[in-house]
Length: 137
Image (cartoon, rainbow, N blue to C red):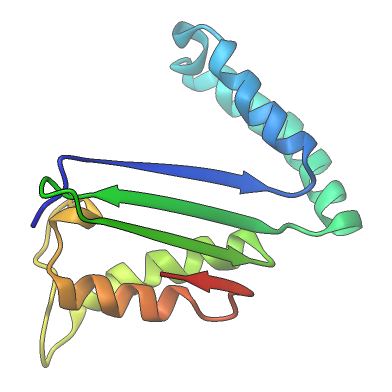
């Protein structure tokens, strides 16, 4: 059964990054949609982020809560020691499901995870949990 909606939480370490992500909500949309301004901000902040990550690590954690229309709920908690690896694994897992020759589980296109079949979701989660130090479903 497809969920009517889905919520997720994202956290990172060290804690100040979470406050910075939260502060981004206060910026005007016109600034956030300004591609040049955001590119300059990214170029400015990347060396700072890389330095902090080298000093304290780049831990990433995510929690997703899904409630189906019949009231059934599922929660996923996953944490990786490195954000880039986590994103790479998840992206590769989606791509692998699309290009499988023997049994393609995702047709070409853009899909929300809740729109995917159960086999595709299971396969993606199996790949995404590689090297996770927290994985609870």
